[in-house]
Structure formats: structure tokens, C-alpha cells
Image 1 (cartoon, rainbow, N blue to C red):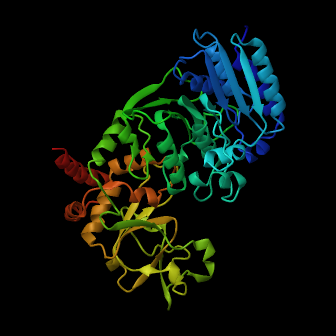
Image 2 (cartoon, rainbow, N blue to C red):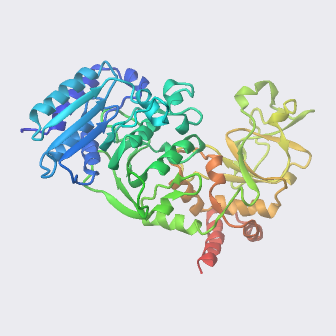
Image 3 (cartoon, helix red, strand yellow):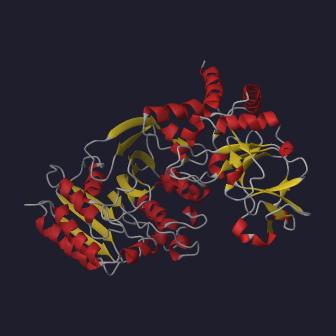
Length: 501
């Protein structure tokens, strides 16, 4: 053959991409896999040990991933026959898929039987997945499942979401429903490789999906891309995307983490083997994406502490006031019945500075739900830009800073840490500042969450030292009168060394 099967398939895909408006494909979450990425995904499967191999490609698009697998198996001495099942419902892409599969069938050196199922991949199997009375006890299972599912948020009452209630919480995304169903379709000895967004690795919205994934499957490999904008060739997708490989539950000793610069450079891949328990952490089953030995050291250093903010009686919450929805209550100047409204802009050099002569710095007390007691808090910005070097940017706020007020409010672009049922001492607030202003905690959060938003649910689950140690850190920092990162790094580093002895 003058060119590979996948190259021919991709040429037909390019014609489709040129003719079909990007906005139309984005509306249904349709993004096509590059040739290099598809080849790498196919290479992640272990060499087959059986003559007849069944593969499933849900949401197959133009058939790029199916072509990549069959290309890989062309010279395999074991496989003698392939049964490939492709799900696709797009009327625009179905003719291309059918033509591509016909081309593969005519040119493959291994006999291939194709089945195209023109049904909704999720709803058509919901009875089987949910084990209803209509479930098929002999529902098909596959040796290899490979997927680039649609990336699209759907309403919580969408038919796909209500078809898989056990993995949905809040407003779900089609990609993790496809991933969960793909795992359901996997044979007990099979393997699954999917390219999906990173967002599922943490956060409350994905909790049920993570529960399902780790109950019914085992992660074997995670592949990361250094350049988040170079994963989908021709697509300009900025979603941070990863490739995962999973199989059915088995040994959970370690996970292989690989990393390449982009979708076109799989010849230069870094690899690290990380203990499974270091990657999949806690009852929340957050997935920590370690890429270097330094990342691993960060996780291991903090994992010695078994406490969290919640277990020591503290909690991070999101600021109470959404200012653009509360315009009727906002004031530019102080007056009777108004209290300070603290914004991210009030965080300056480690302290909360108020006022700063910005608009809407005050809020009336008419709505109790927007008002909180004036007590000691640690404020942390919720949003930073991709270019900023730190995710955690925090400021110490003490009730004594504004003694004339019994109440204040916080805008919802800041988070604040408070005591649960007690008022934090100044020493405790300073101690928290040591943690969140340190380099190691900033690195830890970046490993956990790739976004630019600081999520309070995730922070509340991070390991922290006992409260008495936090208070000691605060005492030491107050005596230094130095709120720099280097000062915090020194104090926290000394404490970590004590625990390592």
C-alpha cells in the first residue's frame, strides 16, 4: 500500500472539516483526532493474545481511531480477524464513515467485519447499564474500546443524563458519560483508551463518575500534553486534554504517567511510574497528574499529613456576594446600614487593604445572606490568569483591621477560610497564610487542578498539618514580620523536615 489506512481516512476527514462550519461541529461537541494522536492511542494497547479481536469505537466520527487500530494490527502475527463496531449518529459524517470503513475493508491485510450502529450510544444501552428488567444479560463486550467522545455540557434533565443517573451530578458532560459506558462495554480481560478533558480528575461535579471509574476499572496510564492548544490538529481546541488507558479492576501498584509536547511529537515522551495511591487520593478519588520527580516529591511531602482543613475545624468557602446580581445593594461610599465588601483587588502583598477607592466597596445589610461576621479570615483569590506564576494568591484579614464594623461581606471572586464554630486566632490565620503562600502548596494544587480557578471543595480536601502546628507557623511568621514566599517556604520546609525524621 502506498499509504496507511489512517492517512487515507484522514484525507477524507480534512475534506469534511473544510466543508462543515466549525460552529456547527462545536455545537454537538465534535472534534476530530489528529493522525499522530490516533496512532499513539492505538499503540497504548498491549499486543493482543487472541486470533479474533473485537473493538468498539463509540462516537467514531470519520473512523480515524478505528483506522489507527487496524493499521497497527496489519503485521500482527496473532490476530487473524477483527470485528469492529462503530457508533455514529451525525447525518453529516455518516457517509464519510461508511466510505472510510469500506476503504479499510478493501485494503486491510486482516479480514475485518464492520458494524455501524446509528443509535444514540448512551440511551440505546441505558437498560443494560442500569440493569433494569429490560437489560440484555448477554450485552456485547469488547476486547478493545477506543474513543474520542463528544465534549459538550448537557442539561441535568437531558435524555443522556437521565439514562445514566448513577454517574451524573449537577450539569454533566457527554464525554464522561461516554467514558463510563465504554468501561461498561469492556470485556473482563479488555483494555480501554480514551482522549478526554482533564476536568474529571477533581471537583464535586465528577464525583459519581470517579466513583464508577474506580469501582469498575483500573487506571494503567495517563498521557499529558505540555501544549494544551496542540492536541486537536486543525481544531484550535483550548480544552486541556489527556489520554487515559484503563482496564477492569486488578493490581493497583502503579500508574504510568507519560508526557509529550504536542500531538505531533510522540517521539520524545517522558515517562514516570508513580504509586497508584499517590495518583488516586482520598475518598474523593481525586487524580493527581504527576509529570516529574519534583511533582512526586511534592505529593509525598504533604501526604504525610492526614488532616484536612475540615478535619481541623476550618473551611474554605466562596465569597457571598455576586456583585452584578446585587447592584441595588452596592454603594460607593460608607453610610448608615452599609458594611465593607471585600474584593480580590483588596489583597495586596499578603494583607487585605481596605478601602482602595474602587467602586462598590460597600454593601447594605438588607440581605442577610450576603453578610458575614467581621472576624479573622484568610482570603484567597478564586481566579488567576494562565500567565500568572501562582494559583494561590492570598491575604490576611483580621477583624481588628476594621474595628468599627461588626459585619462585612465578600465578593464571590474570592474564597475565604474561616473557623467552623469558633473564631480563628490571628496566629492561626498567619499560619494558614504560611501554607497557602508557600511554593509547595501552590505546586500541589497545580498538580491537582489544571484550571486557573481555585476550587474550595478541592482545597478543603488537601492535606494540612495539625491545627497546633499551623498556629506555631503563624507565631513564627508574625515574629519575622515578613510575608514573602521565601519566608513561608523556609518555615514550612522546616516543619516538613521534622516530619520526615
